[in-house]
Length: 453
Image (cartoon, rainbow, N blue to C red; front, side, top):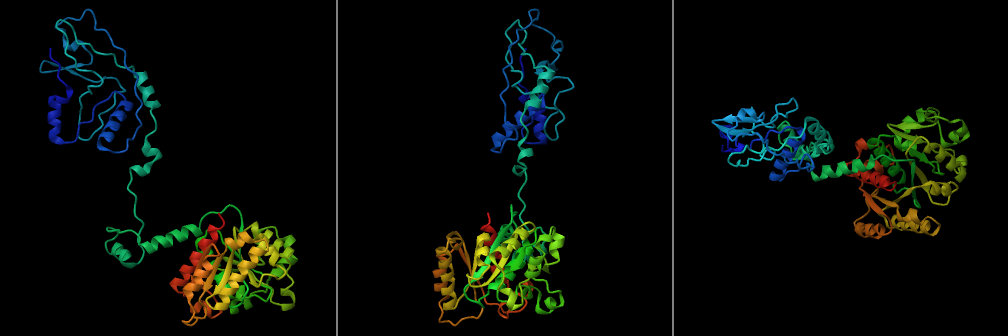
């Protein structure tokens, strides 16, 4: 009796009228169905969901000796008849896998399980034995986990971030999110700066802000960068005023009026009771807060301010390191006052404040040269030089030449543009600063955190 290939059966012809997609083949186990799916993925150039495991070949089974040439097809438990022709079918057991596909109530068995071989005259067709039900289940359990569990990104399109501001943001808003061109280059740069600033740190780090000349933006840089760190980081930063000349770090962060209304807690008060501070709550009594930026005020009495020693500063630094991952230290003018050796010993990197005036640029270079010659070559080489355009120097000063000169002797050079919110010498708040100034402070904050890892 002739054998009909299941792929060309009348059932397939009817199915092709419903869908042009190739009919998924019915398998006796999930593992075989997954293998067939892998073959379809490979044929279309897609990433396979399951890594295929070659199955062991099935042993050939000899045909029964008593088989008659005109054996009734109904005697084969797996055989079916259609118009006098024999069609192979799948197991009728409970573990038979359903057809994998849409809109198909039944699918013919694959030729890979039962080869359609014409039978010799006078003999019954040779049918290889199927694996047992337990073997099929064991093969399914031994199959590797699907890749869409370990790598879901292979099956999900990446969603573009929402654009903020500009033409892209307006288009996104007008279309209700239907048209998303993605963020602009500027926004992607801002997102990258935020990621660098907010990265998680293991341990506590300290950045010293210093210069050899006063009035060139050292304290305003400390406040602006500290507020920026507080804006982006999950943990609040701490800023320490170690200026021996009656520093005004807290006044620049809070405003003169608010600071005068508060109790005058200074670094000297903290030193007197440092041994009794055993918690963040106890430490908070000696701190001032500008939003999420925590500050330790410098001593305002000139007779006391210059008495901070290196050992005393190191005690403060050790205390702060137990509660804050990032600390900024406003060092004041010069590098030879009493506390400076302790500051440099505990510093992980430096900000060297400079100006566009010729004298400011020369002093920045002198500071780096002094550090390199006194055992702090690593700090000098990895320093971040910040040039603040505080006084808007005349056009006779070649700003590009100054930047080129200083950028070659430090890790990074960042320019802060002229801004009245910085130049007035009063309260520094991010809300009133120009966007270019805030961007510069973000770049400085990111460069600082980059130096920690």
